[in-house]
Picture 1 (cartoon, rainbow, N blue to C red):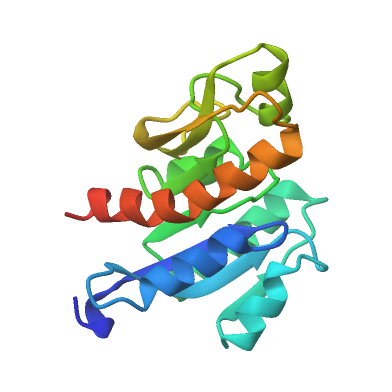
Picture 2 (cartoon, rainbow, N blue to C red):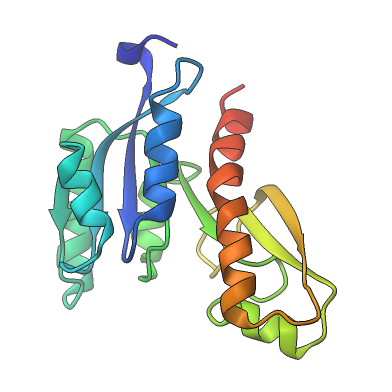
Amino acid sequence: MIGTNKIKTAVFISGTGSNLKALYKFSLKKKSPIKINLVISNYKNAKGLLFSKKKKINTKIFNFNKMILIENKILKELKKRKIKLICLAGFMKILSKNFIKKFKGKIINIHPSLLPKYKGLNTHQRAIHNKDKFSGCTVHFVNQKLDSGKIILQKKVKILKLDTSKSLAKRILKEEHKLFPKAIMKMYS
């Protein structure tokens, strides 16, 4: 795809932005169907914002205290920039049903477990505690129920005997960086 025909994409982050970096690197490839036009964060100190500013990607920070008001501002911003895909990459806020409805089928999320197992938080700790043999990550469409949308792709990661939630998280994150671009390719091929 030529740069001008790429799908205008917004990436929502709350933290380090490691998946943002992976998506950005992917977006620069000739075969990539996306171009990152906007980064949105709910946290002004998110480390990922330093990356988006360094790469001169339009960046907006929203305080989610007044959810409906903020979501309307975000929707206006997305419309103004003709955004067609939203990637939730470690975004730690739950979007409202109204927001999701307006972008139905165009919001995807990466989650650090093999959904439908371990929706929500503390996924690695829960997998280790339950003595699971595998964990992993999932890219899925966002619907109105938490971590319940249609699965696009998953990647299994073996849980090692000495794994802590931190060591498991580190290995799964490496797989997330590969899985997110693969899922986007699958969506648009």
